[in-house]
Image (cartoon, rainbow, N blue to C red; front, side, top):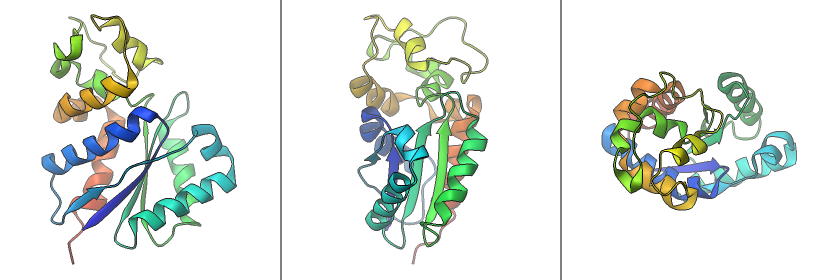
Length: 199
């Protein structure tokens, strides 16, 4: 069994990310059983900028997933460069969890950008109407939640409800084709889950 201990920043991701990881396992299955543990929720700025908090949460994740596990950090990039910040966090983390498989994936700019990348597959789901014209680059909108809100029949996007629901529904291949940060998540999945042989 491969336990996955993830670190996220939003209440919605606490519910949504395990759903996404289970779907990834159906799409690109591992040779061993994968168990997505309940994510650890952190405050993004405190986690990134306070070394004691950073260390504490990583050690907690390491304890949760055990020696065979994988620690996966999934945060919103916001206005930061995903590649630069992910590399910095990765290098800092190695001093605390050198004995664990570890990955950092930053959604550019928000987790919801992955929904925009697969917007056509969400058309008609929970009142979402896919615009006739979709941005070529799904990762451009600064406020991905706002982009979704404007396309909802209710005029609202509720993270705690809609994020897990959309995670269940969105087309993974579409997201892969249209989102560089989602491809990064898939690459990390391939390296740390699919390519790892079971004992």
